[in-house]
Length: 371
Ligand SMILES: [Zn+2]
Image (cartoon, rainbow, N blue to C red; front, top):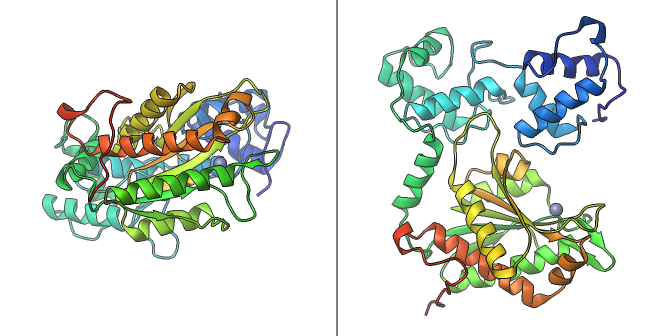
């Protein structure tokens, strides 16, 4: 699609404005109706920040998708599982959130009406005695509004994922983890002279794969050393493996050479405050890498990027340093550094499966090699 940006006029710009007005981010000024002006750009940036999107003030595919979804309030339309093209919108996300609060497993509140949402809705209808059609119409909406919360604490998705984690036991043995080295094939990612993001993260992925194998974890890589599948293909691959976790590996870059440090990302749409296993792992990975390498801590953030949104298991993206920073670049080029990071990733994953009372201090844990 063509980017919609400041200075644009016409139907597309008018659409963007009208959504931002509906959301209360922009005053309704009829004289400005078709104009993407400075005020509109500021409102768009606020929207992007709240929704975990890249804050650039431009309407590209991701922002367009989020704006389209944001038009819908629960009750605006009948919701059901459409087999041709799934129904997508904030109304679906709110429905999923509500079902989760009531104790029904609607999966990640991603705003896509899929099989799990339908199954949760059927279960809800069965238990509340509404006609069983898997459709969220007026009767179901009324029942949803009338019922109190079964799950209190406001973080149902977190509790559900934690429960699964608990059920599968504290050991790493037998777990399946998808490691996703970003880019590859025709897409080198960020490039600095001979150093490419695709190569660096491939090497890191291979080191992590070896370590995981040594402790009895089955690791699947989303690509080979020279291939570069799309984000959607990677997510579909990960879902098909039925993995317990996904770790996506990237490196950042910036026009400012002073920008440096490590950041981690988990799924977060800004629609609810639910914390997930992904968020916990993102925190552990960041903590472990910062303490072992002394890199600048650029924190953990909720995002709605494709790999985080389309994957069904807890997923974390690591942005390991800036290729444009001389200090970070020196680290990334050093195989010893990549070994330390692979170790930090392994330890973070191990910590995730350990009970908190036996959680040793950060940076000290060593994993014994099995066998
Ligand atoms: Zn990247």
